[in-house]
Amino acid sequence: MSEWLDIVDENDEVVGRAPRWKIHKENLLHRSTHIALFNSQGQVFVQLRSLRKDNDAGLWDTSAAGHVDSGESYLACAVRELFEELGVRVGEDELVRAGCLQPEARNGFEFTKVYTVVSDQALVLQADEIDDGRWLGAAELDHWIARQQHVFTEAFQTIWPLVRP
Image (cartoon, rainbow, N blue to C red; front, top):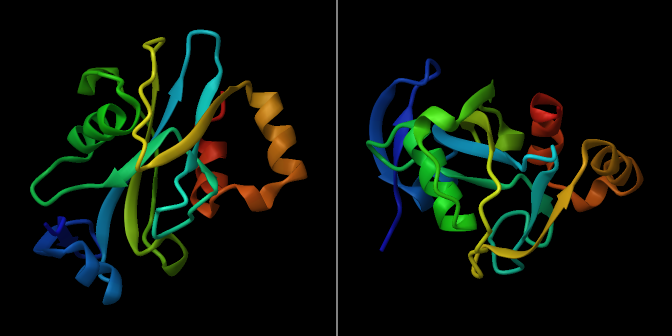
């Protein structure tokens, strides 16, 4: 079954809908979310994208992320992705907006809303999406990025400064 997404204009207003494959093939503007999950000790969870992913396979990325489904809000998408990818249940009111990325070729022509959330719930990683994960302090993650920038997605490298405590 194909994933259907909203097509949006340059003002992020919905102008249509299409299957994900068509949106990506034709470079149509669409929506996504990225969520940085922090624990109460201030560590952020980073995920290692599955080698089975069609984009950025085997690279480290934000805690959870995904496309906004057709008819879905950014917040509802963020709540859904946290549960699907990490097994973490949160309410929309627990998410804190950290920024918005404008669509461009390097981010797949996506309007991306970025959120943070704090939770100490046990994680249940979605096996077909995530191969591994780590909790890291900000300084430790900064050091790792400085040494091995190539192992992180470009999206994460853009988003980290927006969510870094």
